[in-house]
Amino acid sequence: MMEPVLILLVLIGTVSYVAWPWLREKETAKTPGTRRHEDGPPEGRSRIEAELEELDADFHAGKVANGDYAALRDELLGRRDGAGPADRPERRE
Image (cartoon, rainbow, N blue to C red; front, side, top):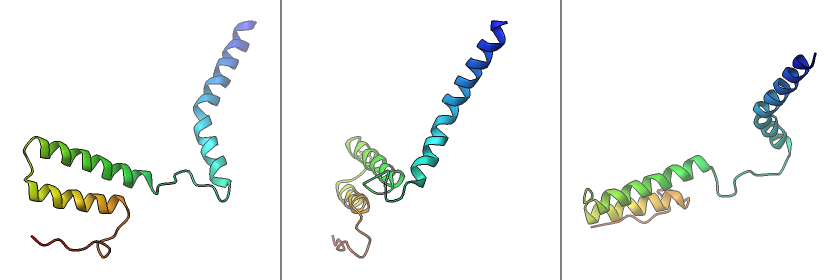
């Protein structure tokens, strides 16, 4: 007699645990005026951060020349900080 009740309780708990992130996401989406990320889109920012880390690793491994490293790093930092191509001065070497 207790087995079906116990199975039902475990099933309800499991479904609730799995469904909670989706329910929570819909709830925060309905709240007007709230921003989940203050620094802009996280996927773009984290992608640029990953590219910066990879560039630094390649430079320290000797795969990227000094001039190329500086130019690429400046470009990535400009993109990360929100400066568009028109906002950045052109580099002349």
